[in-house]
Image (cartoon, rainbow, N blue to C red; front, top):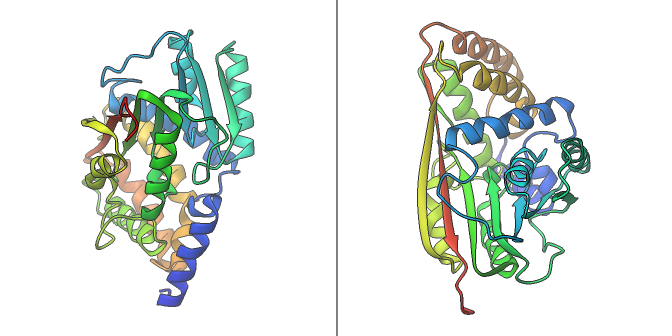
Length: 299
């Protein structure tokens, strides 16, 4: 287990470099493939691109924060051809993939740029009608949210919308899977990337509405989504495949934070994979979208 000084060092290192706070090496091909699939899973769990009913104005502009391989942004661009969509991500290889994918689909109204969302973004004030972000908890520290949301306030047009979709870890009937999620939550807590008071959860969903209100957004609303991925259900294999890769790629992060020893980790991983494939495996994943409006007059 890491001592207090090591924990503080991890948090300080994460605060200075966004790419180090994401617990997985984003340049790995397996992670890129996982994120491509994860885009589809989140869409399914949340009920579509804009299940809350937001409408995009003709000729409007949309910004997707930490867009990853660009699946959500490309789908928005396809379904809303009159809208300009811009995605930003810190990973050059991921942005290159996203631009290549967009061109392969003939989408001229979407582009992707390399930017760090934890720093000021290279866009003028009041540039966007809607700003989207999903799973930002995976690299954000609690103190970073205030700065990001202030930047979103700067970038949104009067009356513009911010919508953020976050989740806690799924609930399952598998003891090994539950322990793996618990280790991930504890590791995020040690790395300073958690709102949880005790490290048992990520803790982002209870505080997200308040964060938007504190940032000055108005008419803040919530919409929850859920999907079952128990054995023998249509979504089981997709979620299993995602976690099969995630649980492997996140192992260096678990070891670095000291929440488990190397000797314990491999047997736990194998047991988790076995239990997720059992006939009596039950699981549900939930997500929460919180959105708010930029005031029409300057606050």
